[in-house]
View 1 (cartoon, rainbow, N blue to C red):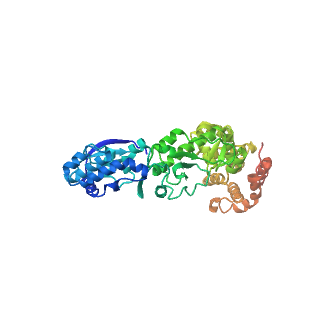
View 2 (view 1 turned 45 degrees about the vertical axis):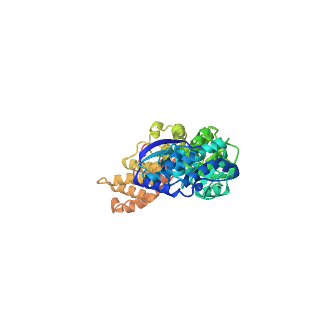
View 3 (view 1 turned 90 degrees about the vertical axis):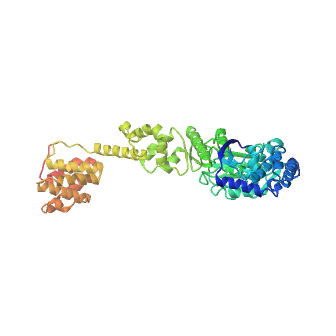
Length: 489
C-alpha cells in the first residue's frame, strides 16, 4: 500500500519507554516470527533478511555485536539488531515519530536502520503498522503483502488470500458481508470492485458514514497500486431514462482514497453532483424513479398553492431526492425561484417583503395564498353605502366572517361587546350572529333582554353571513327591515 509518512522527534513517556524495552526482550528468541509467511517465490526475496536475523538472535547477549549489526547488513536485520540493543542499554528516553497518514507511531532510533524498518520491528504486533516496513520490497519486486490480526503473508500472486478477505470484511463497515442491508435501494451506493478478491462491495450513506471502507480494506495490503485493485465509485440506479447519470468525479475519488474524506462525505459529494445533473437536465427523479412534471406534482402537492409552486419550479429545473416533499422542493429552490413562485401563487403580492420573511418558504407561500383568497372573497362582496350604524355593525361582522373566518368574527364581536351602553337591538344582533355561527362568546355579555329578539333576527343574520354573494344586498335589506331600519344605497 503506497503510504506516505513523515518524521519527527519527542521525549518518551514512561509508558512508551517500558513498552519498547519489553518488545526488545520479547523478540530475542524467534526472529522468523517477525516476518510474513511467504510462498516459495517471495521467500527468496526475504531469505537474506531471515538468515541475518537468525544470526543476530544467536548473538543477542553480545552488545558490541549488536552495535555492529545495527549499522550494516539487510535493512530489517539492522532494525532487529537496533531493537535488541535497546535491551542492553535499558533506556529509550527519546523517540522518533513516524506519521503514517493520520496515525502517529513512535520508535526508538539506534544504528542506521530507516524509521519504517524500525517501526515494523518495534510494532510487529500491530497488523496495520508493521506492513510499513515492507513497502519498499513491494515496489521493488512487485510482491503482495497482507497483514491483519489473523495473519501476515507475502506472495507473488495477485490474488488476495481468503483469510485476509474474510478478516478485513468482518472488521469493516460491512460486518462480514459484501454489501450493507440497504444496498438493494436506488442509492447512492459506495462501491468497491475488489479485483484480487473477486468480489464487489456496496455501502449506503446510513452505514458507517464516518468510516472509510477503502482504507479498512486496503490498510493491511501491500501492493504497488492498490487503487487499481480496489476500483472505487458511487452508483445510483434510476428507473427510467430521464437522467443521464454522471460518473463519479475523479477528484472526489482521489480525496476518498487518500483518506481526506469519509464514506458519508464521499457519497454526499456525489449526491450533490447528481442533484445538480438532474437540475440542469430538468429531470424529476423521486425515490429512484423518473416522473413526468404532472405526475410529480400530483404525488407531492396537497394544496393549490403547492401545485402552483411546484409547477413553477419544474418548468425551469429538475429535482432528485428520496422521500421528497413539496416543502423540500420549494425550500431547495427558494433562493433562485422564490420570486417566481410568489408571483405565481399570489400575483400582486409584495414579493420583496414576502421573500424577506424568515419563516419557512412553504409557510410564506401558504400565507400569501390565503391572503390572496381573502382579497378575492372581499372583492366578491358588494359594497353597500348609506348603512345606518346597526347596519354597519352587521356589515363589519359579515365581512370579518366571509373574508377571514370565524375567529375574526368572534374577535370583532368581543371588541364590540366591550363598549358600554350598547343598544338592545345591537346586542340582539350580535347574539343572533353568535348563534348563527356557533361562536364561543360568553352569554352574559349580550344581556338578558336580547334573547327573544335574537331568535327573531337569527334567520336573516345567517343569510347575511353565509348566503351567496349575489344575494348579499337583499339579505342586508331584510335584516335591517327586521331591525326596523332602512338604508339608502
